[in-house]
Image (cartoon, rainbow, N blue to C red; front, top):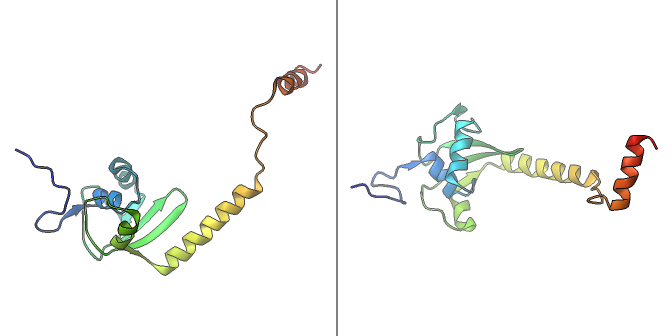
Length: 136
């Protein structure tokens, strides 16, 4: 009979994909697993499998969308908790935090510089577009 265990077992072992999910870097374990499979998470500069056992003191490099994180594992857990508790599971390096904040500000400035459209064209706009395309 198999038992499901949501907490680290006697030896304190937690799978890396489960820890990334519990630390709230990914919304689901499946997304964490896929990020590991695609090489978006490295441990000591090397790709790792989702089943890799994470240990306190491990240094991880994560790429999530266009942002990068350099973190050190502080605490092990396989149980997803609140965001404030999840932040206690790891420590992000100061250089990583500053680079990430700078990148976020740059992305935000890029979004502001691109004008948004007026939405769907009205019936009148569609007729004008058709006239323009047909050369009338």
